[in-house]
Image (cartoon, rainbow over all chains, first blue to last red; front, side, top):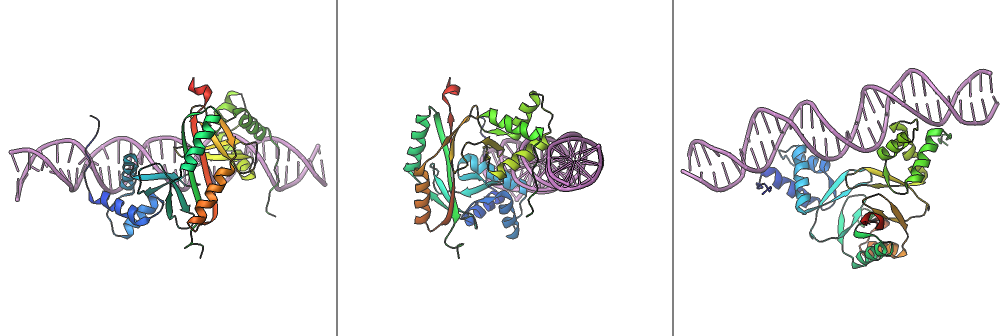
Length: 131
Length: 131
DNA sequence: TCGCAGTTGAAAATCATTTGCATCTAGCCT
DNA sequence: AGGCTAGATGCAAATGATTTTCAACTGCGA
């Protein structure tokens, strides 16, 4: 009930491919531009719709840029993880860290908070962009 | 040079007071509503302008809610710190943790990233809201 | 008290994102 | 191979948050 069947269309595949090729976090607009440059026949609306769908399915991670824009990335693991993002080129490395998980748990408990969740992202300049 | 002198006006003071009284993260709209309820004579535009100014001055911290809305908080320390935010009432506790700083530094270095900066926020439900 | 740079508010302008709707199309059925 | 229909797409209009425009207003130093 409630679930609608999903179809495989060329625009969905194009978005998936673009996301794959990007390697880092990209905004819907960025992906749209890249797709258009590759000659893909797709609308910005569909890029948004596809990204939202992929995010719901958990196959992409969503973050917010400083300006509040949503940025998306195809992630290898669907487990909870963090990122080390290059602020120049958007390239990102997935990070896992029991350390942070423990810290979050501990701090929350100490302050009487429950149902704790957390967000932790690192921003820097990658070797390539550092010149 | 280029800096413009700042004046002390009743609407700026009202925003500062509202922020002070809030105790947690609030959106511009929230603050505006609260101010209006208190009978303050102020426009939403001015709330935004004042918050932006305070954020630039470093006297308030800005975060983004999941929906991408900007939320602001008057912070005690102007040092780098994190927050433990109640997702029910917005109440927040300031957290300091050399642990996280070290982790960020270490991870970045391992991956060849430089000029590292990080964002780490914890979300949960505070004792009061847990009932 | 004057003058004016800084400030304010209402409305218009932006920007990212979503939605309405009429038109397509993937893919199962025959 | 042709049809049928739920799902998908695109454009344009709608939303919502935030910013800008600009004319009117007000601290505050002279």
